[in-house]
Length: 321
Length: 248
Image (tube, rainbow over all chains, first blue to last red; front, side, top):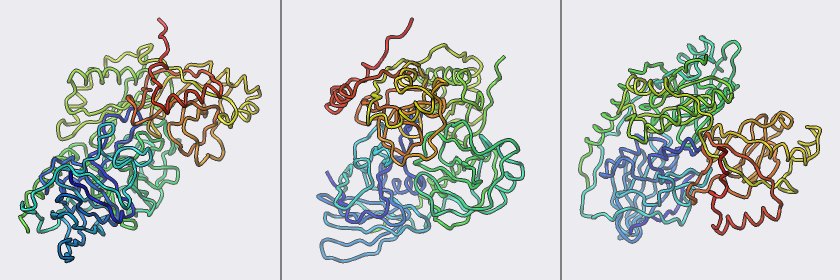
């Protein structure tokens, strides 16, 4: 079976698939790919199913080497430098293409382009065992992935299938986009904890992404939001979703992402809709964000449009060497 | 007359059916009845597009795929279950968790006893004398919020949370008690330690407590704690032996 050897892991590289669903009632977080657009598109460039496990990395990726057999890798959202084992030649590989690594070939991934997160998807998927229905790594509980932890130097990451090196690679000629502009938000379930002026301000003022951001969530900085008369930040804990916008007592929102806990005890003013979570997840510290209120019908239309954008992006791939 | 629940958005791929805003056994019983009804329906293949339901103290979250069903369709499909769900007296199983309330396993017992104005033995008798409903699991995988701690030993959280509470710690805070599944930060008072892990990904089931179950604690000696810990480590311990006989 083919393997990838990890030479330089990068600050946070983990194995992720779509996530661990169906167990939130037992307190098991979903984890899963933070940027579903890049993750799914990378898999589609390889002809993988959307949910095939991949290596997710933040800011700077690992250097990976094909061991034993050829491995085809899709560089989603970040390129890399390829070193051929045969002649020591080095090649700069742009993002959004597949590359076939022969045994001994290495590619140093990253930095990510345009966002904070990138993926190395592999033909056949990363083949670590499923734990509780998923290969996603949830580091806090040492669950899934490779021994439940981020990748480190010397790790061997098993890959599902060997590929025919003669088969072609594919690339996107222009970087794909899953949208831009304000992040669309559905109000609720605790929007009644906020003064009407605070809700108006939430949708009119900019916020900045704080450096205190990780796979669990991103903190925002900005003019604090005021709570409604007689209401506060604390609620009797209830369920959480990716994109949920919690507002603790400081009045500065936190947007929850893949590694969020299953429940939370702060009032949620609303949630970023599914079509915009991937591009929110890849925001870098210091970037400015704005939010726009949408209706359920608009969110539903956006969910379908997201699938079309993803399909069209994958369909635009062309054959390359 | 109980109030009809309200339905609220939780993003575009989930909604919450909210029965109240407080920790209240009657509100939770309604949540659990609907949870049981919806999971039963899902097991029969009903509720297409609904992927998961997640109960909390006072609401039930219903996760669905907006690509498969519209919000209007989900609400219409849920409506008859919401209208029909009657709180049941008991929906879950009863478990008896061994807890060692001695020595190093009980770092906060003396302080709790002093603040409650009683002896440590009385605190243990009160804590292990009650039966606690599992309201919700969360915080970390397998952490069950067990409600209904007797008034006599209720204390607010510690002023300064510990950065690392050992796995297995049996703890109280306010009206809640629980067992830490993993070493985690925590502000609860540590009364004892349970040798059986609340979460073990290699075990089937990884998490054995479910929302709606009930839990009692049985005091054990430090020697018994060590023996059970060894059984767990060897893979000889069967969590089903912790099930209590159900009262008729």
